[in-house]
Image 1 (cartoon, chains in turn cyan, green):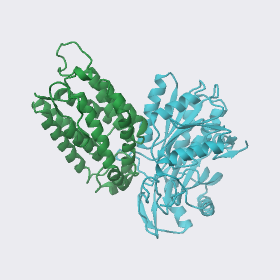
Image 2 (image 1 turned 135 degrees about the vertical axis):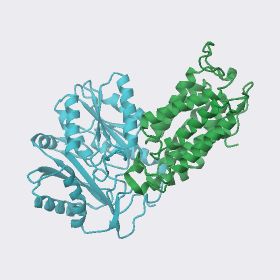
Image 3 (image 1 turned 90 degrees about the horizontal axis):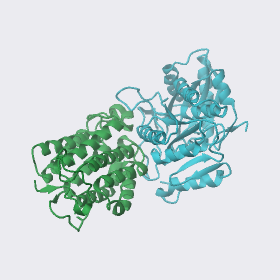
Image 4 (image 1 turned 180 degrees about the vertical axis):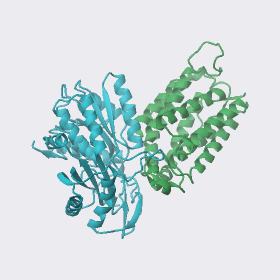
Amino acid sequence: MKKLINRPEDVVREALEGFAAAYGDRLTVHTEPAYVVRADAPVAGKVALVSGGGSGHEPMHGGFVGPGMLDAACPGEVFTSPTPDQMLAATQAVNGGAGVLHIVKNYTGDVMNFEMAAELARDEGITVEQVVIDDDVAVQDSLYTAGRRGVGATVLAEKICGAAAEQGRPLREVAELCRRVNAEGRSMGLALTSCTTPMAGKPTFDLGADEMELGIGIHGEPGRERRAVVTAREAVELLATPVLDDLPFEAGDAVLAFVNGMGGTPLMELYIVFNELQRLLGDRGVTVARNLVGSYITSLDMAGCSITLLHLDEELTALWDAPVNTPGLRWKA
Amino acid sequence: MSETVSHEAVTAWLRAFAATIAEHRQYLTELDAAIGDADHGVNMDRGMQAVLGRLDALAEGATGALLKAVGMTLVSTVGGAAGPLYGTLFLQMGKVAGEESPGKEAGGGSPQTRDTPEAAPGLTLRQWAGLVDAGVAGVQARGKAVVGDKTMVDALVPAAAALRAAAAAGLAVSEALSQAADAAERGMKATIPLVARKGRASYLGERSAGHQDPGATSAWLLMRTAAETLVTSEGPASETRPHPGA
C-alpha cells in the first residue's frame, strides 16, 4: 500500500483536521463527536440539511457543507456509517427552528444509524424528516437485497434541496423535492481498479490488468459483472443503457448529465466519457440541459466512473442554477 | 440449580469478548472483504476496546445498567450496521436485566429490589435466556432480518432458542451456554452456502454464496465466549475476576 498518510488509524481524524485548517473561515469542524457545520449555523427559520456517511467519498459530504447546500455533514470511519451521536449533535447544531432534513444514502448501516438519530432528535422536540436516496440501477430492488444503493443522485439532491431550503421553503416541501430528485435520477458505475482502504492495506477485490467491474458501488464492494476492459465509447454504452432504460429517459427529455470520477481516474478521461455520453444521449433524442463532470462522490483511490442522469424541469433547473458556495461545489457565489 | 450468571461473570464475559474480537480482528475483516466492505473486524474491535476502557467504571453499577452502557458505547463507536445491531442487542438485554430481580423468577411476588453487585446472587438460566431473547428480538426489529438472510441473526436466533429450550428442560447454566454456542456455530456455518438478502453482501447476489457471513461469525464468538466465561457457582460473589480467555 502506498498512501500519503501517517498511521492508518489516524486517517479520518487527520483528514478532518486538515479540512478544518483549509476551510475554517467558513466551516466549523467538531470532533468528539465528529461533524462539520457551516459557520453561520443555525440559520434561523431555514430548513437545515444534514447528511453523512462513511469517509473515503470526498468531497462528499463535508465538502458540500455551505450556503446553498448542506448545513452539516457527519463523517464516519472509512466506508463506515457515522453514528447516531454524531448525527444528533449535528442536527441540534443546525436546527434553526424550521426542522431538519436528513439525506441518507441507502446502505444498511447508514439507514439504521440515521433512524436511531432521528428517534433521539425527535425525543428532544426537533422535527426531523428523512429521505433515503437509492438511485443505483446496478442493484436489483427486491425483497432479496438491501435495495438499491445511494450514489450519484445524492450530490444532485443535496445541491437542489440546499437551494430550496435557502429560498425559505418549508421542511415538507424540501423533503418532497428530495424524494422527487431521487425518483427522477438514476446511476450506474464501473471500476478499472479496486480501492485500498488504509486499514486493510491491500485492494478490497482483485481485478486483472485487463478486466473491469461493472455495476460497482462506492465502497469497493464488487459489482455485478466482470468483463474485459473496453473503449470509453463502449463503456458509456454499458453504463448509460441500463440507466436510460430503467426510468426510462426518452426522446424529448431534458436531463442533467453527471459524469463522476471514482477517485483514481484523471479528469481527462472523464471528459472523454462525458463526450461519449453526450453523443449517445443525442442519438436517443435526450437533451443534456445541464452537466457536472468531476470527482464528487468517490471511492478512495478506485479508478473508474459513474454516470448519473436526472430528469430536469424548469423548477429543478432553476434550483440547480442557484448560488452555491461549498468547498466541493461553487458557483454564482 | 446450582449455577447462576453473576454480575462478575458478565463483566468477565465482556472482557473476554473484547479479547476474542481483538484476536479475530483480521479474520473478521477478511471474511467481510469477501462479501462486504472489509471493516467488520476493525469496527468491532474499536467498539469493544471502547467498552473495555469504560468497563471498570461501568462495572460498579447493576448488571442492567452495565449492559445498557455497553450498548450505548457500541452504538457510538462501532458505526456501520454492526453498531446499531450489537448496540441494540446489549441495550435490550440491559433493559430486561434492569427489570429482573436476580435469583427470583419473574412473577415471584417478591419486592423488586435492585441488585447491588456485592449482594447479587446472579441471574437464573431462565432470566438469562429472557435477556438474550429480548436482545435478539431487538436486533431483528432494527435490522429486519430473518434466519436465512445470511446475517448475524443466523447465529443469534438458534443460540437464543437453545438457551430457551435448555432453561425449559432444567439444564445447568454451563450446559445451556455450551449448547447455545454450538447452535450459534451451526447457524454460522449454515450461512456459507446462502445467498445474502440483507446488508452489503446482498448486492453480490449469487456471488455471495460460498462465503461465511462475518456478522454471524462475530455473533458466534459472542456466544462461545459466553460459554467459556459466564458460569459462576452460586454463593457469595467472588472478589477475583476470571482472567480473559482463561
